[in-house]
Image (spheres, rainbow, N blue to C red):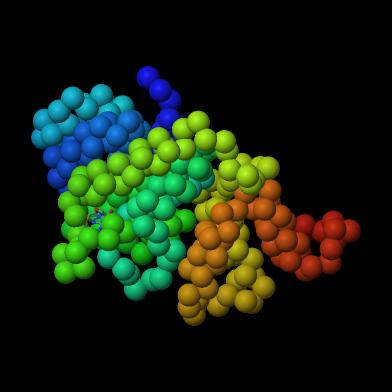
Length: 255
Ligand code: SAH
């Protein structure tokens, strides 16, 4: 079988209520050549209804990784896209399915990539959307834009397959970071460091944080930081926390 580079792609289902939908997602994925399914606190799983809707894709259910949090599901991923049925109160970089698929296929050449699908009733929370580099929205009927989660997965994984087929055999893009991209787990550590340091520096008021952390997440998400860039930012924060006296300042905060 021709390898078209879909091995690094995973679909993450958040808090799915209906086991039938989990089975239908497994089938949609396998049809498009994807195999990595992550389930964040599914309501009922394993379940006969999931297996029956999976048809011949029950191998994906057998190897599905069940985790307690979205953080766990994406911690090792270098690119995370969240599928959203509607535009939110938060404005976040949003791509059309084709464009998003191209970004994901490019990133999957060098690291793990996640497509995150929301709950049937309420979709993804703002806090979950903020963990994504991009949102992806299927431009459906604006009067009735919410697809069934497995139907949405089918559309998005189809675009991933088309993008992968188009890229197969194509030379790698002209610019590629010389270091691996930071993972979602490393970015969470960076944001936590920012929050602590900016609070210590008096720039962030924990009693009145406003939109600061959200805006920083959005900024750094757009920049698609690599590991060295994360280290530089954390080094800057640590230096500032020490009083900004520069590299000769050997005093650590605990001393
Ligand atoms: N009422 C919910 C709809 C959830 S549908 C809401 O407004 O968010 C379940 C999931 O399917 C969504 O969280 C999303 O991941 C995906 N989905 C449904 N319709 C979509 C669309 N038009 N574009 C992208 N993803 C969609």
